[in-house]
Every structure is written in structure tokens, then in C-alpha cells.
Length: 467
Image (cartoon, rainbow, N blue to C red):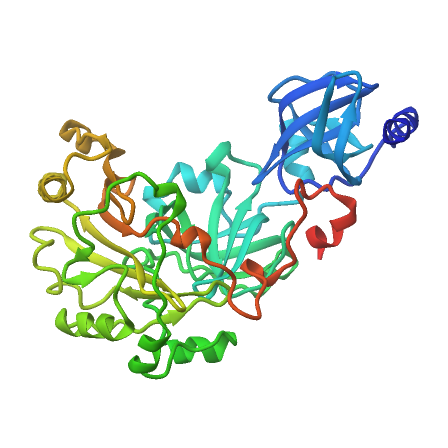
């Protein structure tokens, strides 16, 4: 029945013109012909999906404009001898030139604005300067660490050079065309494996039609790239977001702590020699222990519960100069980050150091690598440091250790800004990936879960892409 319906649909001529539902160019990764249709494997922004469209000549790398259609599951093709787990059936689809693709995204350059490709081409020169950029929201994660995270495309760049990250309090949906304004931050390392070559943090974001509401851009450069604000006190974060506050007293919080269990993917690995990190027992620390540890380091880092996820985060960006004498000789310790689940102990700790002198960064990377190797033995993965490359524009080095109860990583990165970042991360395996949504929330963005294979062209869920 389904194939008969597909044949019937394919006999009807597609309209000469249609309104594309793309949030970015849909690039062909694979194409199959059969049943009078073209089956195409497409990548569109962050979406990866199969679609059935009217048969036409296509090649890998072609970019398509598509309308919308139903999402089908378990679609069998007799001609191809295969079954597609998820297939979007679209009757309006055609190849388009780069100019048509950019125009179809509906993202025009705005007064005083900078195209995304130009931002990436001159990241170092624009770092710290306020920029204004128009783009379409191709990815949205809401309520993470008290802010909304968007990725914007405007069709002017290629690959990752057409993807600008933005954090803001403003609320927009996938597919919206917006204008964002903030000082440009480059080579931003947030820990947890999140690294952004370019990002607008705490940006003012408005709908494209409301660009006149944005303040005029000050042409003078900022003193320094914007840094992530220190985590707000738990009580304040809870009052603003509606998220439940952390336990009112250390004793109450300690009583709520539940033990961690081994992650199944680590079965067979040896245990780490120790989970004590700078005097903090990772994985077994109660909030009382954490408070005492902060006091011993002369730090004041208040916990802030996440809006959507059942985690609590401690982020310190001030008062770190003398807090870790065992780590800082030449550079500057810029960030200490810890995370725990609502009812579990600390499962993540990271330190970020920054340097302006490559030889200083290389010396401290080598010293830290030697200390970690003495503690954990030779790394499981090693990307050796090449001192000669530190004189260039980009340079990377790194090492990893894996145990049943601990993952450790050390990395050195030099970006276009010339600043070198040295990051060490300690994490209990599987906790961050498995943590659930906060009670009363459905998770990131508080939006319903999409079905398998969902993409912006699915007609049953079109309201999710356009509202």
C-alpha cells in the first residue's frame, strides 16, 4: 500500500515554485534510484536524514531545496531491496545554485552587520569587538546553565565556517531568522569537550524584523573578549528559572547524596590509582566536603542548578590566582569548573590555564603531562607536543587516560588569537551523558521529544520548525 501511494504521488507534477522548508542547504551524501523515486541521504545543518523525492539527476555534494512531507517508518523498497527505518516523503525538491540557496534561507545582511564567513575569516582581528550578525537558527538548546544556546547559519561560509554559536536569554525557535549582537569571543573552551572557534556570549538577540531595536555598535574594541559570568548563587538561579534550589543546608544536602555506580562501558578497565584531585575526593564528596575544600582554597564558588538537567554546576572565574600554586607558574588560571548531579557527588572537575608566551605554555604542559604520567602511567592516547608548531597560527597537543572510575584528559590549544589554553579534565565515566531532565522539565528546551528521523521537512511536526 505504501509503495502504491508513493507511485501515485510520483506521477503528479511538482509545482514550478514552492516555499522551501530548509534551515540550511540540504547536501546530498548518497543517492539511490528506484521505484520511480530518488532516495537521498541528506545533511542539513545538524540534521542527518533520508528523503524520498521525485526522481532526478543528482550527485554527491549537490545542495537541495525541499518542501515538506510525511515522515514514514519502516519503508520497504522492492527495487532497491532495502528497508528505510525513517524516510521523509517530499514532493517538492530541486537542486539550487549557491546564490539560490543563500537567498532561500531568507538571511539578508543587515545594516552594520557582518556575514558569518567574514567573522571566521577575520576572527583574530574582530576578537573583543562588538559584531552584529543575521542568521537562521539551525540548532537550539535551551535552559542550559541558565541560558539559551543557538547556532546560526547565513549561507555565506563553508562547513564549520558557516556556524556561529550564540548564547542569550532571548527565546527563539528552530528556523527563526534573528539578528545577534555582542563582542566576539574566539577559541572559547568551556570544558566538557565544548570548544568554540567563535561565539557571541550573552548576546542581545532580536527577530530580523526588529533589528532597529538594537543599540548602535560602538566601533571601539572591547578591553578583552567577554568571559562567561560566574555561576549565580543557587537561590537566585532558582528564583529566576523556576528550577528547584539546592538543599538549604550542607547537612540536608549531604543526606540527599546517593552513591555512584560503575558505568557499564568501563567494565574490564582497572580502577584509577586515586580519585583525590587537589585534595578533593572526586566521586565521594558530599556538599559539606565541597564547601570545606573551597574554603581551604580560599575560593567562594556558589552552586547553580541547571534549569532543565538534574545537575548542579560550580564555576569559578575569579580569585584563582593563588588558589592552585601547584599548577600555575607562568600563565593565568582562568576557570575552575565542577559539576554534580542533584543527588550525587562531584563527578567532573576541570581547570583552564591561559598563556601568551608559547614557551611558557609548553613548559607547563610538559610538566603537567609528566605529573599525570607518573600518577596514571602512560596515556592511552597521546598527541605529542611539537614546539615548532607553537610559533604558527594553530597548534594542538593532548593526552588521555581511561579507567573504570575515571577519565582524564590534558590538552593544549593555540588559536588565531595567539592565546594558548591548557585544559585538564577529570570525569567519572557516563554520568554527564546519562543524567536526566530536571523534575518538571522535559529536558533541553522543555520541548517534546521528536520522533526518530525528524527533520525540518516533516509535515506532521512543521509547527515545531516554524513557530
